[in-house]
Length: 293
Image (cartoon, rainbow, N blue to C red; front, side, top):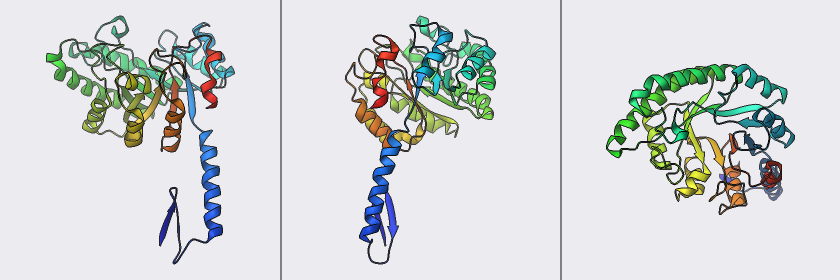
C-alpha cells in the first residue's frame, strides 16, 4: 500500500517500519528547515537604496546581502553600462518593465492603447536590446489605464494582442513575459486590477512563457486574499513582489502578516524570486529585518 507522511510516501505490503517513519519525519523537518533559507529575495533598485545615486545602488544592494536585483525602467542608462554595473557586483538581474509611455505621469500608457501600437512595439524592441545584454529572467508589461470604460473591451483586446507580440520577441531569448494587477486606489482606472482578470488573460492566451507578476501590496489594497490566491494559482505565478500595506513601506509597517506570507510561499512549489518593491521608511539598510524572518 502507499502511505503519505506530510507529502512523502513509502510503499510496503503491510506497514511502515517505525524506524523508517522516524527517519522520514527527521527528513521532513530537515527539508523544511533548509527550504526556509531558500526563499530568494531581490532588491528593487527603483525604490530601495534611494539615499544614494542609482549607479551606486547595485553595490549597496550587494553589501546588504542581495544576490539579485530588479528595476522598473533601466532605460536611462545605456544597456552596456547597466550590464557592467551588474557584473561589477556579480548580481543577477531578475526583472525590468517594458517602457510605459506616459503612465507614471497620469496617462494611459502604451500596452492597451490601439493608436499607440507602434510606440509599444518600439518599447518592446528597446527591451529586447537590454535583455540581450543584461539577461533578465522576466520582463513585465504594464497594462495601463482605460479612462472610458465603454472602450474597456477594446483596450483588453489590444493588451492581449500586444502581450502576444511581446511573447514572440522575448521567448526566443529565454525570457518569461509577465504582467501585473495594480490597485485602483493608487492608480485609478488601471485596466488590470485583480487576480481574476489576470487569470482570464493567462487562460485565454495559453502561452507557456506567459505568467503572472503577483504583487502582494496591490492585492492587499484591492481586498484580495493573497494567501488563498498563492495556494490555488502558484503554478501561474512567475514573479512575486511585496510591500506592506497601507503605506507601501517595508514589512512590519502595515497590516500584512509577512511571516504567514513567506511561510505560504515557502511551502508552495514556487521557485522564483520575491522582489522587495517597497518605499523604505528610513535608510534602506535599516529596514531589512524582514530578511531574517
